[in-house]
Image (tube, rainbow, N blue to C red; front, side, top):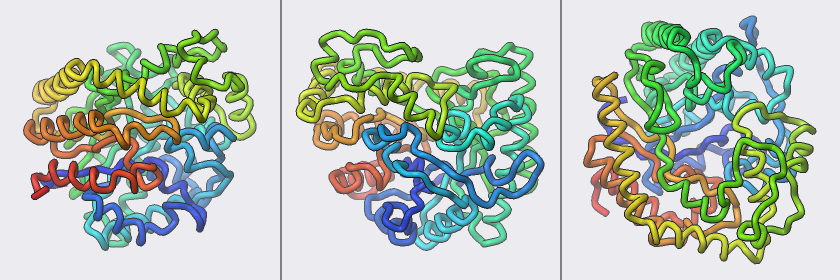
Length: 427
């Protein structure tokens, strides 16, 4: 990765979109659409950690399933996986990179395995990986990332890597050994052990792939700095400064609690009241499972249950929240950027900064207020200008920014404008 600014499309599950009638099946055709909208980089799940088993044996194909069963179709990004399938990650990665090479697009390889990807896969694949210590996880995923990067080198595609990261949102990584909710809760002694293992893995990977930049990825701008490897080239932070606007609709009822807590009338008036958390869990138990980020169960429950004739009203409620508190959200955006710069300058002053996710996650496929809201896109313009002027090297315009999203066609010109703004090209 050079000093070239990166306009990043967050196409998280694109490789899983494997069917001939699916959006991401033909990367060669699709890549022209990325460029047309001003994107020069794609960040997504690339499957390292799932290329070999723990004994080093190659995994040629993996079965996968809809993460929320029949409710997946209601949730943006999750709606890409509404049927059972099989994936050959090596084949799909090569198809992606060959297409990217033709169009001058860069790729950020990453893994969401410990946060989300295991939801899609069979327990016999996932359980051994989940039971590893954090240090063992780092070792296995580094070895698999080496396999992926070596494959790219053998096919003259390594130059298409913008930067690579072992894990998405590593601070959210759950741990069985020791038994803690995520590594952000670990002791100082264990944090040093984790960081030492991560730094050693990066040194090992850099020695084998000296042209590749390596990143540490964090879920927000407030995180434990003693877990950050000091030898990274990129600090990839996420800034969901606008996501709290959705609380105007959710009323705080999306939480890590699987009990069906009674909802107030201010929420139920938008719902059919036909779906429970247990309904979602029953669907998941048919083919997948969840043991972290429990809030996704009530999220799937509430957003799958919105009445069709209430979508516009619920969307307007959220837009009104953004409008009424515009200055507060704008201040939060600037605070996040200023804070991450200060953190970077203090612990890894040599590292470049990238915002790999933000600014909201729009859950329901039927919502269109973000696509049509001028106030929403004003926020996007504000944060694009602010981060460019502050020297951030790469950003997404928004998390829901892949070809699977309704915004892809509805907001084509908006994407083009925002991406050119970040690159300081003529609008």
